[in-house]
Length: 497
Image 1: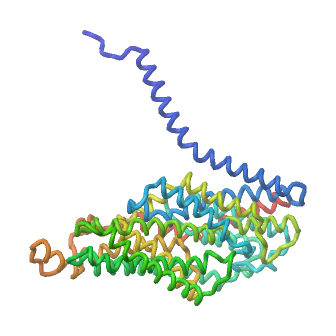
Image 2: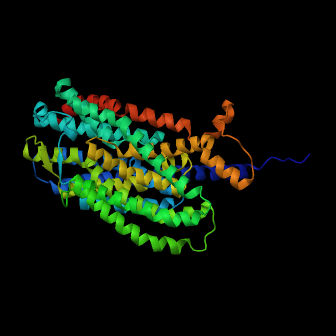
Image 3: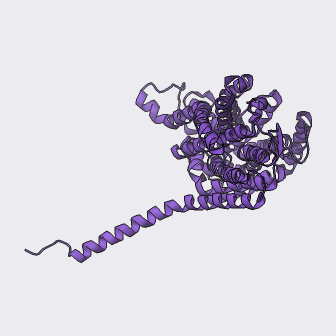
């Protein structure tokens, strides 16, 4: 009988082939961490060159490396909310989204990033309670490390969390470890805790409201194209006005100080101008289109790409302080030997934050972008448009009411709002029932909810597992960062002392 076994040489060659394939896969997985490590080292070397010969240069170099690590994690996690809906709706590819977001994040941070920040983030800790330079430096470094580690963990498990809340928790934990519970401004912490609930609910309600408007006045109309010609320019005008107000209020603080009434006037003027400009454009674009939903999606694609770019710019202008605020405070304290309530941010510190966010997005962002844009609920350009519009409007409303909000919670809450509204609309909407009866010849009398649990679960349009994971991550962000920061503070004090 002929021996069918492979010769020993063939077996060895197969093993070598598998080993090469495994090594190649492992090597590709190490490229992004390797580039990130190189960036952190370059930031530390750059900081060393900038502060060479000054007091506390060793501390500044270490803080620059930690700040770079924090910025990378912000880019990996937080920026996904700006471009995730556009990618999930296929309005643009992942590569396009990564480069657009990286460019506009950096531009927002460098052009409009705040040049003065509170050294104790958002007034959480009384500066007098940590007046010792060594104690203050240890607290800020512990806050940076703990918040960066927490965001890194959240990114690894696929949960978009608030980087603002992470740094808030880090500062609070280090402050308690350094000066006790009485050093914390608890009313401020209470308002931040309230934003855990307010941000996603408000974002979800506004996004669901716009989706209901689009379904009522455009999608479920007999002549969808005529309805789109009437309402799409209005919706684009609302988006332009909202972003104009948003950028004037939150994104241009470094260039010019604008209050709420002026920002609303700017938004109204810009919105009216864009509405008039878009009317003939939408009319030309819609000529020859078929009377179906796919045609409508095309009309929302370009505005959605613009909204992702504008969200990235505003995010870079506002959230870069989460990475560089504590770093700037450490630099000031190490150089001058005193604790100040306000500090100026050196250009090299701002560059660490700006480029760190962009690198973090490019290297590690795709995972969270896919989560926000594709895995929570199915998005198309119209639904994604509602999410982006909700993000801008919610920030404006919250700013007017004086409420602290998280851009992450707003955007993800808006995605949930769109998904849950679709579930309700699919099962119970009389408008949908009337449209179906009119156009497919059926004679349904009412919309009845599905009674069978398995069938109901199959019909869910929002993945419950992702919902529970994200909500749990939101709830534990501040306390987890605080506990980790408190533990790290005692390590930092010994190292600095």
